[in-house]
Length: 434
Ligand SMILES: Cc1cc2nc3c(=O)[nH]c(=O)nc-3n(C[C@H](O)[C@H](O)[C@H](O)COP(=O)(O)OP(=O)(O)OC[C@H]3O[C@@H](n4cnc5c(N)ncnc54)[C@H](O)[C@@H]3O)c2cc1C
Image (cartoon, rainbow, N blue to C red; front, side):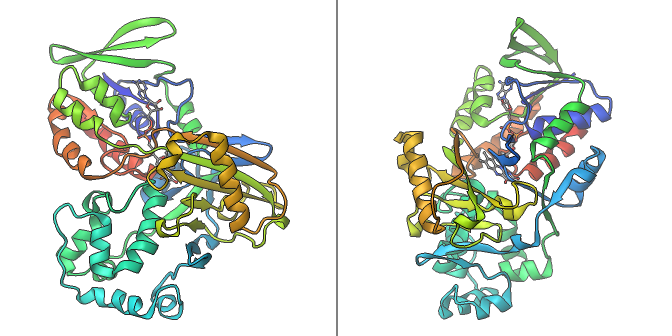
């Protein structure tokens, strides 16, 4: 039997695939609800996401959702999401979306625009374990690294592009340089697969609820406390309302964060545990703010806005939820999700939640020329949010295969991709282990 520890999207997808193949499994989740990072707040006809807001889906993901019977529940993002705004020089400016708008827009200086086109002939080679910032800066220049890369990386990883390793985050960049001598040439010769941004009628938790309904062997409020080797098998010490018990299995899948995996593997693999301990998960606050449309000085129409580090704002980015997907709020109301992270603003670690909320609302009122007070404000946090693919993750990746020889497998958003789609791909692939 396979023991799956963790009922986030990784563990649930694996359980679903194993069940379809009639491979015995049991999934243990320490919380009373499933989903891990995926948690939708649904009240007063407002659908707000505490964690991820959308899935970037390709054909594989659509097939997976179809198999789950979710075809008619999918909501595609509005076309308007192609518009992305960056705060630059005191105002929001649309990011050029292609070569023509790049030439006609004044987002970049003329010398920067020329530099972008010169990337095709840039002979700089990428260094081993180069950071994203160094790689992009060496090929495209400062304006691209400071005003495109930096805010996007903050939006995806809640991280710092000067720390994240290019090969771990976006291996295609260095592959393009190796194969074609240019990142842009690589994208032209080998365009990325078309993907669609999606959610569900009742938000992302609908995916979790559907998986939950399909699965037969889930144990809730069941925490795995220790792993003990018994011959070729593993005996799991689990703790639940009924007390402690042992569960015997042939393979253990750790679909849990690195710092939780560390404590389980430490007695047998102390060196690997110390590598897992180093994986950084920054503190992130999310603030949902509702306004009447008529209160805002301009109508948010696009995916949202990102705030580069150089602009020194507290909020790293704002998702314009009610513009991205229909049905998130009533038509006269706007939902904004503001993200604040400690990599950008380290002082939030020692600040009270109330103070952060006051500062965020004040910043939003100024940025969006708001008249009056919000209809409602909800703040929450992820004390340990998204694993950082920095230099410490290189060692983690190099050592994971050692655990696999002992029938312990890592299947989570570290170290093989943080997106929900990545978690689904890997868990689906992984179900072939028997
Ligand atoms: C704020 C935020 C915004 C994000 N935005 C996006 C986005 O827009 N799009 C996107 O694609 N991705 C996004 N992500 C990333 C994505 O949500 C996650 O990478 C993904 O959901 C992780 O799933 P997982 O199953 O690997 O891990 P988790 O969701 O962390 O699940 C792990 C589970 O294991 C359980 N657990 C831990 N230890 C034990 C134990 N000892 N015993 C039993 N159970 C245990 C936990 O309770 C938890 O339920 C975001 C993440 C965050 C935090």
